[in-house]
Image 1 (cartoon, protein in one colour):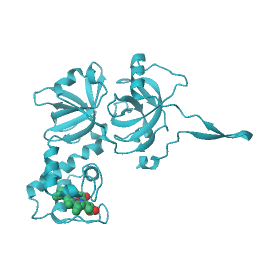
Image 2 (image 1 turned 180 degrees about the vertical axis):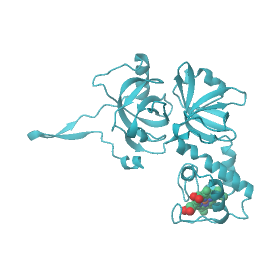
Image 3 (image 1 turned 120 degrees about the vertical axis):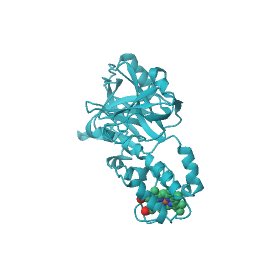
Length: 317
Ligand code: HEC
């Protein structure tokens, strides 16, 4: 958990020893608001070189995607804003997980999918984790044909299905809306070869221009019927101890899904916990059995829904 170590280590101003003069404060790199920076970068095609050559920003990581050349595309924004593209490499890229609030610095650069910032190694500080993205704008897939009006904004493709049963080696996937329109998703190279989500899903992400088309960099993939499943979990009282996103008495379903993301037997294990209860996997507090209170069909629906959150973990890799 590399990022855990860095929480709270942001050094805004530092001090240096200067011979006999003593401690002298070093001026912090002034932070540039993201919308202003995006406008400047787009106008200059990424070639802008401000005095000092380095720009510092603060925002929430929206999505990340490993590009074919090994570079990582990260979109950083604040709720309601257009996202800033950041190119990162190696260890620095792993700290930029979706929903981390970060400060980082870099220099303007023209990257493979437009103008952005080339990340300065060692400049990332994680200020908080699990930040919400705020409201997204719901869209159907036909809109992706020309996404220019919403380039870099947080949007949602509703009720799409994956065209292929497995994700491609390049981390790209085609999705189809109910009306037949298709869109290309950039998922993650670490998801290559994985079984695609089955059934209708809502995909949240950021449109980016690639060549002469538009692709959506996926930030979250959630089941389209998740509201019905929250209602089912409420009816069966699961929600008194569990929240999908946050730890309560029991673990967050997102964390449960992350732990079992590569386990083919996961649904059976979760159903067994529901039937017989259990303790010790997430702490000392036990979960009581639901055998006879929740039907096997509902247990299966709840298990599949909980495991749907594994995409949060896959997209953060
Ligand atoms: C009274 C509180 C409470 C209620 C109600 C409750 N749980 Fe839990 N649940 C827990 C606790 C505590 C744990 C952690 C147990 C452990 O450490 O093994 C847990 C763990 C789990 C796990 C993780 C199992 C694993 O193998 O890692 C799942 C899945 C789960 N609960 C699902 C449900 C579902 C579905 C319901 C509703 C039918 C439900 N829970 C109701 C408290 C509760």
